[in-house]
Each structure stands twice: as structure tokens, then as C-alpha cells.
Amino acid sequence: MSEIILKHITKEYENGFLAVKDVNLEIKDNEFVILVGPSGCGKSTTLRMIAGLEDISEGDLLIDGERMNDVAPQHRDIAMVFQNYALYPHMSVYQNIAYSLKIKKVPKSEIDKRVREVAQSLGLEGLLDRRPGQLSGGQKQRVAMGRAIIRHPKAFLMDEPLSNLDAKLRGQMRVEIADLYQRLNTTFIYVTHDQTEAMTLGTKIVVMKDGEIQQIDSPANLFNYPANRFVAGFIGTPTMNFFDASCEETGGQVVLQTDTGTIRMNDKKAAALKEGGWIGKKVAAGIRPEHVISAKDGASKVFEGEVGVFELLGSNAIVYLQTASGRMVMNTTDLREYTHGERVALGVMEDKVHIFDPETERTVTN
Ligand SMILES: Nc1ncnc2c1ncn2[C@@H]1O[C@H](COP(=O)(O)OP(=O)(O)OP(=O)(O)O)[C@@H](O)[C@H]1O
Ligand SMILES: [Mg+2]
Image (cartoon, rainbow, N blue to C red; front, side, top):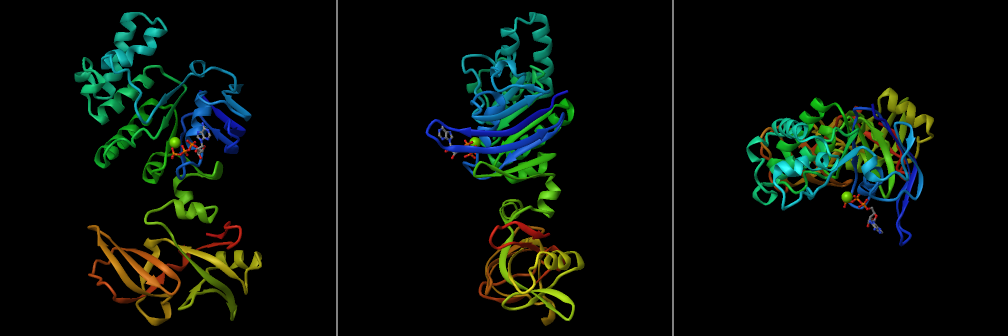
């Protein structure tokens, strides 16, 4: 059992910089929590405060109900895996993995049994005699994880563990970490700025910006129901298209009017817009590239685009367009050739439009 709770956690560095502001987060047993956000948003600082590597300026950190603010890292019973692996270069793989147990004076036979178990579960059996300098990046990463696993900690903390690996190996290791999580049944707290890692590994994702939490949700909810414009733009690739529109009601139908077309609002969106007093006002709207479609007839045309770059990716294509409402990206499975400068009429899947308050950037309706 391990439950980790952050209550009003704040970090002010010595120079007065507020890196983490009033963070509240509940992590239940066996959750895979991802901290994600742009560089400098406070992910590592948050993780390091949980690990005990950084002092907490304000707030409480509870692990299984016990306040941990002043407990030394080695007594928190959590293991951290770093981006740069932090292996002992002069020790063999075997000694690296065994180290924490040796320090704890666990009997040799017990250490041997556990090292071999861990090595087997990570595919390191053949490498136990090597030094870290004789390993590939992915192998080093596995040794670093082995060192964490062997302690049977309450939680694993990982700070960008895959960022030193090339794209293919990252993909493989991502699957291995997912597999490890299934087998170990332990809490994981994982920092990344790679949203593919976030969306595929996490059961709960915490999106941060400027030291503050923007939204805590499941991957699917973050994608479908972003709480504000920042989250909407951060989650999803290519990123969501944003455009200005005015909200109007004509003949009982609520619509968004762009410079070149009209988007009809379904009952749910219309109700939210009416309730918020948005009729007659300007709103910020968003549509994901996969929800931009080519308009088959004049009535469904919302934007008029001029094709810039066209990328064929196999089963889909990304088309970059310029419109009167700004740059627009379409992710389509209609694989006809687009040519540079070609004019195309674009529609949108009307139910998929997101609407934000242009001032506060909070979501009005998804
Ligand atoms: N020792 C320090 N003193 C002052 N400011 C610091 C210190 N360490 C980090 N910061 C600042 O705190 C903010 C958060 O840093 P942090 O390392 O937590 O960001 P991050 O989200 O992990 O970013 P990245 O994705 O680049 O690793 C940054 O603006 C950083 O410059
Ligand atoms: Mg970091």
C-alpha cells in the first residue's frame, strides 16, 4: 500500500524564484502518474521534493498518511531513476544492481537470488559482468531500473528516463516500462515533456505550466475535454488549430461565424454558450487537425485554405494551409496529392469544436 499526497506544495528557490506554486495532488496505490509540461514548468522540482532531494518550502508531503517533509531520502522508501542513469562506473552491472542491498547488509545468498531475478526480468542476465561503460544507452537504462526495482520500493520516481535514447529505442523502452508497471503493481511517478510517453504510459496525467497544475485527468479526458486553451494546445500532435469566431444565434440555431463560413453548435455546446452569455460575442475556438475535413459542398465550408506544405506519412497525410483565420493544419486519411498553392475548401467536424474564453482562456465548452 502506498498513497502519496501533496498538499499546497510550494517551492521557492534560494534566489526567490517560485518554481512550484500551491500544488495539490493525490496519488493512489498502483497509479502511473505522469508530470508533463514545457521546459522549466517545475516537473523535476516537484519530483525531487517527493524524493527528498529538494526541500519543500511550504505545504505537506504525506506518504501513507505520514508527513515526510523532514524525512531523509533514504528513509522515504521510494526509488528514483534519473535521466543520466547515475550508475557507478567502476562497478559491474551485478554490483550496481546489488549495491543498495549490500549497504543494508542483506545476506549474500539473498542478494544473489534477487539480482538474478531482477536481471532476468529486465533481460540483463548476459551482461552482469560488464561495466556501465561497456553498455548501450538502453542497457544502461535497464540497469538503472534494476537498481530501483531490487529495493521493492513503495514508489518509483522517474525523471525523463528515456530522453537520452534514440527514437526507436525510446519506443521499445516505453513498452518495457509499461510491461514493468503491469508486473510490479507499484506506484510510478514519471516526468516527461514527451506527450506520446505521457498519453501511452499514464493512468493519470498532471499537466503543469509555470509551476502550476493546469489539469489532472486521464489521457482520454485530457484529449477530449481540455480544461483550458493551454492544455488543448499542449496535448495532441499536430497541435490543435485555434481561430477567432463570433457566437451568434439565428432562427433558434446557435452558430460560430468565421470570416468564411459557419459552424453549427449542437445542443450541448449551444446550451453552454447561452448559459455563459456568449451570444453576440467573440470567442476563441479550437479544432484538432484530425477533425478538419475537406468541404464537399459550399454549405459546409468553414475555411478557405491555400496549401503550403504537404507531408505524406503512409496511412495519413498532414496538410499545412493558410486561411483568412490563420494557419490551419489538417490530418487526413484522404490520400490524394495536394499541390503547393492549391486552394481547398475546408470544413470541420462540428461536434469536435472546442470553445474558450478569449480572455481567461478557460474552456467554455468541449
Ligand atoms: N537551484 C535553482 N535555483 C533557482 N531556480 C531554479 C533552480 N533549479 C531550477 N530552477 C528553476 O525552476 C524552474 C523549474 O525547474 P525544473 O527543473 O523543475 O523544470 P522542469 O519542468 O523539470 O524542466 P525541464 O523539462 O527542462 O527539465 C525553472 O525555471 C528553473 O530555471
Ligand atoms: Mg526537468
